[in-house]
Length: 610
Image (cartoon, rainbow, N blue to C red; front, top):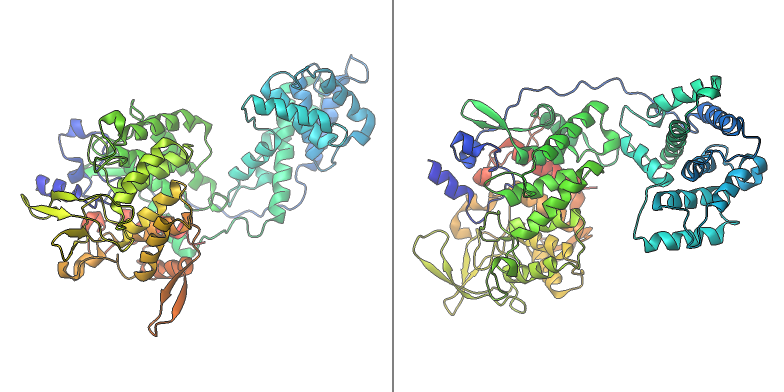
């Protein structure tokens, strides 16, 4: 039984990036693949949604901001005489206070004279010959202060300071980042008016007794209060900021998925025991994050935060996650971690990027450009590369900040071309093992329809026997979309002949009824293998390539424009079960008989259906 499942899972079209990665395989002495065969049932209930508060409009925290500025002014000038900078001797504090004052409801300006002029003069005196104001953080905030309080009068100083900062190759978050931080915390039950309670309380206390003011704490409080006020005004201008592209069907699936976790962690069953799993958790948290952050409750966000924290603690020393298929698992975890701005994840993501690059079959691992697998990435652990692993890997590399001009992408293109049935770019030919018959070789070559197979000479959709007796691996839907997605991630433009050929195959084979391309001789059931994976990668590829409509031919032979996002959303919502889940009832191959897997795939697809 174990060997049969293992062979099935590692067949040339394993679509589940997270089903074979238990954190405890050695201790359990069992195959991770076997362990994953059971749906995890972690004891947990969906957090109860609180009554929904209303968001206040306009300038929140007006009184508190006025009170705090008054207290800061009194404290700064106490015992020093009029004319002291608002931040006392600290240039950084003064710059932060001025930047906040310039953005608050009173829009303080250089024309306010004695209230701001001494502080502006303090900043001017701190200017160094190179145009900076000390370190990069202080310089960045001085730029923000000048831009808010005196943009015209300080134009030259701003330009010179920006030029210095650019030479340092440094980006320092200032007031705009503070606003962005507030917006990232907005939830369906937590608006800007709820996100500065402690600073508001401090402002009232310091207004009552300015002698107790500590300048760093007061400065932080003022920046937070004004950032909440500015963020709220941005929400005033937005249309439906908390309900973007989130349907009742998605909410139903979200709540079902939420009930499968415990403290943000998803589990694998081994016999009668359950174990936390990084791959299940990565994909589960990624699916939960498909719900717009402003539409989540604080309880829902807390689950996501717990899951992300657990993932960070579960990273292997080499930068990977998981055990038997570490590349797949690592890419999924990266997908979860990079969806939320979290400085704590930076080091982990840098390690993960280096790890994924080590998995690439290139010169560093003994491969030459003439080798079939050159440029590919597989499951990890020295396994052969394939297009399914590669598109996940390329996405993870881009998400961790690797630029499209990195040599890793150029090497990947070599492999991508060898998976594409396009004779003008595919140089692969030769004998390869038959995936279905032990001991038999296939004399493989490229087809020319523009679609893609799993890896050079190999297709789970069967083969086309050519007149010369050679066999071309059949192009099929999920891999052709993976190819389009990969070309886009590698920076290849939409008018490139390789991309155009893939798009042409998609147009000629457009359908949502099946995963197209399979050899009819393989039977009716094969058309539905990997169906929900197909939906996910279809949505990801067309979204990445910025394709809004797919042109196909109607029953009368006339061109038909398909708005794929609308079509896919309607199709998936029509397939959803009463409990909010999806499952492949026509072919459970590659674990698509599992509710959690298909539900994650469906949520990932629906997220792209804006």
